Length: 265
Image 1 (tube, rainbow, N blue to C red):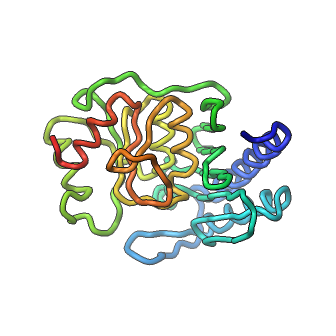
Image 2: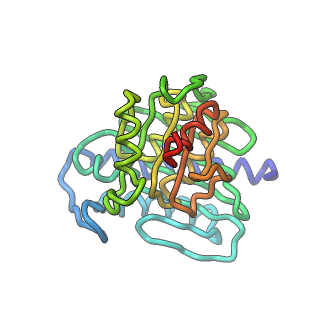
């Protein structure tokens, strides 16, 4: 358990850093900015991503100059600290680049390999999600909790598709097809961090995805767990953001959704 003074400092810095990144997003959103493509098709990065990352780094380094930082755009800034900040300066960059307000800043704080805090902020719809391990999850400072749905057949789900290996056996298209052919609503919004937060808030009953990076899920999976949900890999084992597969649910449909994903139903 974090000591109270350190906990307060980390929370303050996390909120400041998240707000700093979101402010940059707002400044660029809907305007003209440079867009380039990273490895793979439609793997976009904009000058807003870099500017948001810079603003976030400045806050973290000012308060905790010795902490490890892992970020989507800059990679790993390695130190010997037991604390690691896992940063996505804009989650949902394709949405952002097209003026679609389903995008956010996502920052998780890890201590000795365990996620202890997370924040996700979408300034365009004024939703700030926060969780601290063992203390619940909030949306704009109000406690949130997952839904009560008991069956996948009656659930509202959300997923995301990678831009590669869509046609692999039992891959994203096959799983999606199985679910929608049974009349189960499955949405695709384009921001894994928002997907996770909306599971935590009870808007979605479950989320699954085949290929995420640590910065996509680090904050969001803790928020789901602290809202009373369950997060795992495709085998049902305890979730790690350093492997690609994720199932996040209200807990009640979790095992059944894993069976759907693994073609056991």
